[in-house]
Length: 166
Image 1 (cartoon, one colour):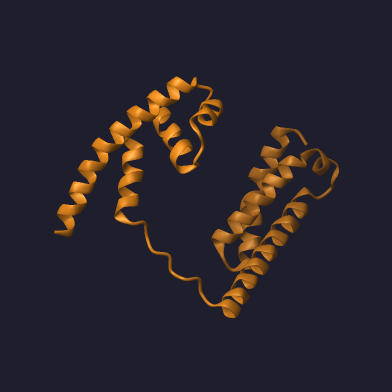
Image 2 (image 1 turned 120 degrees about the horizontal axis):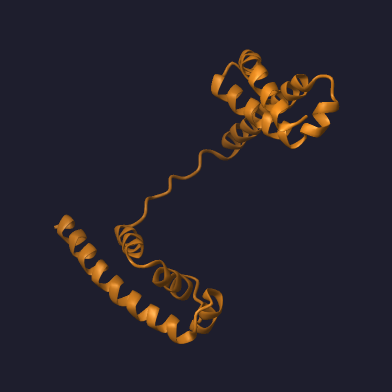
């Protein structure tokens, strides 16, 4: 099946297949998702489908199997919830963490990358240089400039946070 033939097949059968899967699943969004995924898989096998006498039946079968697979995963998830209870609620990030992330976003990418590799990934300067492809001296300069920029940004952010708590 050529790309043009596949396009024609898709255009001619899309709404019909979505309607059929909608009736089978009872959920329009789910029907659209599984039919779309089935078409993606059909595209990858379009050479095989051209020899097939019923490509629409193949897409319908794949879409149905995808829907059943999703139901099984959902059922397994519900069973796990019943057995183990709902997951504990995760607290949001602390204000200091949010301020650090915001400050990191304000500095240049090269500086942000060396800061993350050196301080968060705990890599020595030489390894940071190796991973970034920059000389050791350049990495040291970027770290120095990043610390200065972060200090300026974090001082203002933390002052704002202190004002909010007061």
